[in-house]
Amino acid sequence: MPLSRRSLLGVTGAVAASSLLPRPARSASLAKIRIGLLLPYSGTYAALGHNITDAMKLAAHEHGDKLGGREIEWVAVDDESDPAKAPANVNKLVVGEKVDILTGPVHSGVAMAMMQIVREEQTLTLVTNAGAQAVTGALCAPHVFRTSFSNWQTSYPCADVMLKAGHKKVALVFWNYGFGQESMAAFKEGFLKGGGAIVKEFPVPFPSTEFQANLSELASLKPDAVFVFFAGAGAAKFVKDYAAAGLREKIPLYGSGFLTEGVLAAQGPAAEGIQTTLHYAEALPSAANKKFREAFKKATTREADVYAVAGYDTVNLLSVALGKVKGDTAARKELIAALETARIESPRGPFRFSRAHNPVQDIYLREVKGGQQRVVSVALKDAEDPAVGCALVK
Ligand code: BEZ
Image (tube, rainbow, N blue to C red; front, side):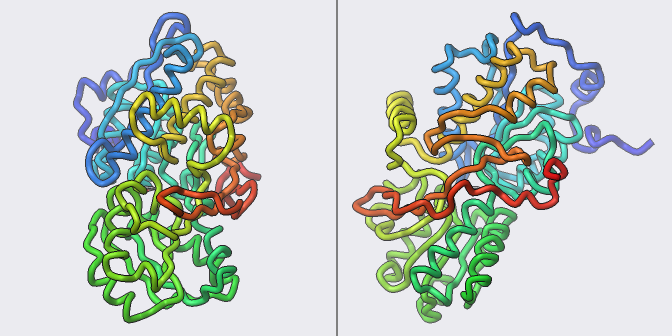
């Protein structure tokens, strides 16, 4: 008999054996609901993982620390943003800890490994950041939802923004893994269609922050503008290095909003003038955003960002859906239907899922001015990911 995936992944005998037993039907009134957090708590994306986690716990607290009438048990694993460790980490939560619901990750490579396992194990999963197209595309599944964004949503709209600003010859700089590559493909889709040309691409190995050689080449290449993907600590470093190399005033810098999200204070004046596209902006004037930002600041002493928004919305959506089934996670069909039809007032704007289970959302054009992220306009209204290859979309 061929070895099962579980034994190949090195799950201990005891855990593997117990996982073969049927899942216990949990009493909706008594048992705590176990929510798995597969997130980075170390490395370049650590701050993102912490903000997602803290915002999830904030939302839970606002619901009396219960979902569907059940108390919550959080089970967290540091995924280190390492796709190679992802199968073991996902198995730890799904097979070992038998979480009722899995949430996370940040890194798209980790998400791809996670998708394989949760599809096999049929684990109800809410993706709280990773933008890999396949999550709500070719690998979409009835029990998988994404509360953040797809790659396409955050990068495609920036092409039109840059063309309208008169930039025709653009260079691309990005972390060279799934998300960075897809991000550039989505940008190019719009940019080439609109008559733009890519003068050069600069892939940087993840999570390297050695940018000097690329910055020197950019200086001599003199493109009209640069479009980039970096996030977290890497984004802070890139923006500072770009300004220190004297490029900030010479070659306008654009990107998906991750370039400045959560790192504006660290970037300081180096970020002035950067324009980005994203489904959230701290300056959105809605009451929901104001309330969320104040509550997050009070709870953590930190500023909220797009990562925190996804964590917060995840728990608010679960609250709606689990409320409908009175906490009974065994009522799968009803629970999935409740998530599909859930509507919440998110800090980003009204939230609803597409048929592929990805948010349908406005994409904002933002600009850093005076150390603040200003909203310039709505770059794309009601942006719905094309969900290429998703069997739920017929
Ligand atoms: C990703 O790998 O999907 C990702 C990581 C950080 C920010 C945005 C996307």
